[in-house]
Length: 243
Image 1 (tube, helix red, strand yellow):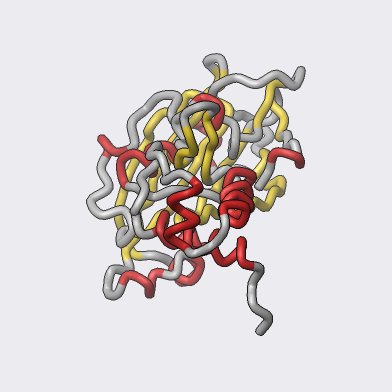
Image 2: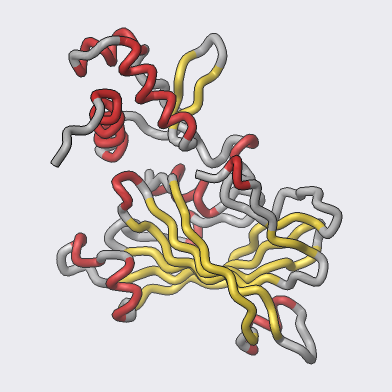
């Protein structure tokens, strides 16, 4: 197998350090000179590695202050993984509201995607349902499934209502950092319980989004099904800002 370019090797070592919790979200990482000494490379190599992690949204450079581990709670990152806009294309900060939280056995499909074998005998998952509203109107219902082995003792207090995203709360309350997602979109008939939360009557067709979220080293964190009433909202992607 061909050897990785040197800066990619440094990038992988930085990711390993992040995954091990060496630098928590919001923490400042060492300056380039110290990282170069640590990894036995030149500053230019470190700079290239850090730049790729910045481009991926994992690190954030603050002018005159240094480079920090990105935080989902920072205002500039609110929309990183939120793709709904108003009909006129403008954005609003969504407000999330808790509906229910339960713990149970994973389905075979959930166990396979979430790689529950990583957690030994802990094959349970938490299932969290919440709604999110935009300027007072319920726009969507989300059902998130996460490994109990990765989120020990998840409680209602750990997923509070408000404008902070679930990813921000995963990061701040459980030290689980979502750095990448993939999503599949389709249109389907909405289950009756979801339709009631969305306020849908008559036709129950809505946008269905199946999203998979990952942390460092492509470790799966969450499987989420979201139903969206698109009568007042659109799904928008700016390809230049995705990871």
